[in-house]
Image 1 (cartoon, rainbow, N blue to C red):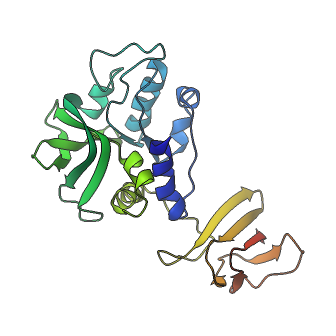
Image 2 (tube, rainbow, N blue to C red):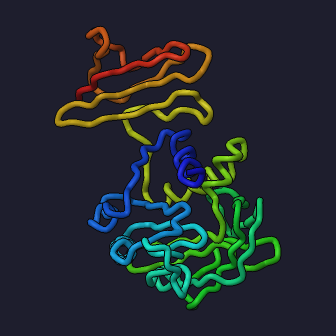
Length: 265
């Protein structure tokens, strides 16, 4: 639970939409609709899902996995190699020495557009690259490989030898992992919703958008204690609660308030 929540919180705080896919949905090929896919604490896997993940990366997707991915099948039987189900070939690494750890520091190599350090929890899993095309993305304090990246077809496969989401969920005041997750998403081409003008980091406004043919529904949640104004980049807008026309250049949201707007071009 904490691993999933931690990844979600990183995107939620930055107003990036997130979907949750069941393994059955991955098996059906739905992952192809997304630019980046995270596998937090994915100790259990299926053969069909693993095959779809390989296809997803080959066709241009970015896949980010954590320690012990694909360890067990749905019956609880362990795989002889971890990552299991042939994912060791996709990521180009195998699990090396493993030990439990409450907090694990990972120093990132040449990460110009993001944090220089991330922090894992629960496990320190040394990654052993299996081919020369696998690059070390980060290392543990003892110099052993902790995170890797491999180009596969049109996409990328990234492995981290600990649980980043879990640490972030339990330490929300530590921003390193959130910045790392968001930097990976940005590199994969994920952009914030274009209807709302960029909000300064830390602004307590949450935005959510539902799109339909010819119009959109925009939800604005003000989690702060003071009134805030937001600029909406759309043609016309009306307040769904009272039907009044809204000046999209100055949409005011009351403290702890909600605005629900219907927008048209």
